[in-house]
Image 1 (tube, rainbow, N blue to C red):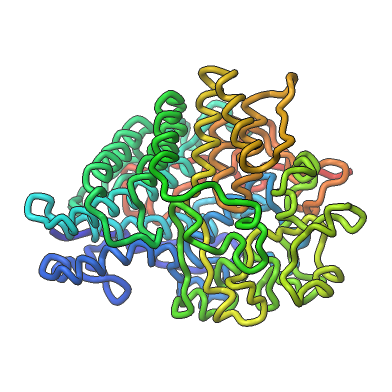
Image 2 (image 1 turned 90 degrees about the horizontal axis):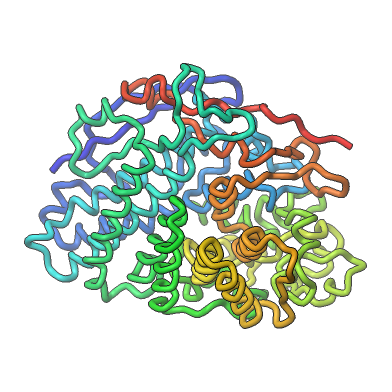
Length: 546
């Protein structure tokens, strides 16, 4: 079986309006992966193809790095991008943050720019890696071990396409309420082209954007196959490969996307009941050495090692960008002018002082919570001198090592946590039976986060559940999808905001920028998408000023 992959070539990688060129070639993976012929002839090579999938979480894009951009560190970078496009996470200043601030400012998001191109290329490169693993196993002649690998591969592909579908699906918004693009076509509910392991090159050259229903059915089929085969996956328990609970978790996410809340609730509960982990404790979350860097605490995660290119780069990795508590990272505390990751001021103020998750952020100096913030030993003086209040303490460098990137950046980050499933269950229930949803939210919060939690009577129940989910998953790349699904507004400009001036964008309902556009080189090689791209959302919102 041969694979055909879109090979996307840079024409230029500048900040200006530089077009991207591309071609469509038959390829067999080289160097970083294994060839199709190899995987067909070797069980060890088949295993290598499978293990290439979690490795791709930390795929390091040399071509972009060589041109001076330091954002392409893989799946975690895409999570970070999505969070910076919400109103929950921001940088407190622009210094050094320029590598990511075009997403935060809604600039250069059209089809001819590298910022759009990176996300598209990363995910389709991921799909190629996954398709190689799927094509390596013939279910009719496979061993139990190989069937387990196949189940994991189907789960990975469902993860990738579910992210793609929810990112690129066009949904009406305050700038394009009728769903009409510049060519006059209605693109509402169109997602992305589907590329499978068995497609011929001719098919990929005339491959339209899948409608929501077709994409849903494709992903569900992959998850049904994952559920069928993944029971045979026994030897990988380090949480870098998915298990049955993760398959159920993906089904819960899938059904939430299409607002089938009965099934979302059902599969969230199945994920909880089958998970090998419990919700993280206060110490799990706040420990200065192991807080949010320990993969054993999550259903599914990515583990970086000192041998990874991301880690050896020193600064182009998850820890460098997501942890404010290093001296080697882009958001580190060593200098006062670093661009710290901060939680939105209004979001922080809404969190109860008795909710320990509020301590995942540096309290203001005059707050009684400041004394309760758990800082890495040896960092206290510099953090108190340099770090902006409300800066995140959530993601700690590995082993609390804030000085040496070879250790500190060899960290883990979450792809799926069981806590998400509790909030999916509660929200999905609330859409059907408000009292049940309310009680599920109360139970989780009181048992695991805030013993004094109380929803109250006048609150918007869905908004409250989703708010608590946003607090729980801050920095984990999921809030984007809830805002888009629920048509929520993003409000960064207001009196007392802690977003820097050019990121103070406000929307009425879901932002136009949450409908990503297909890249121009895809249109150059795939005639079926010509005329069917999403409208360019760039610069359609004026920053708020007092």
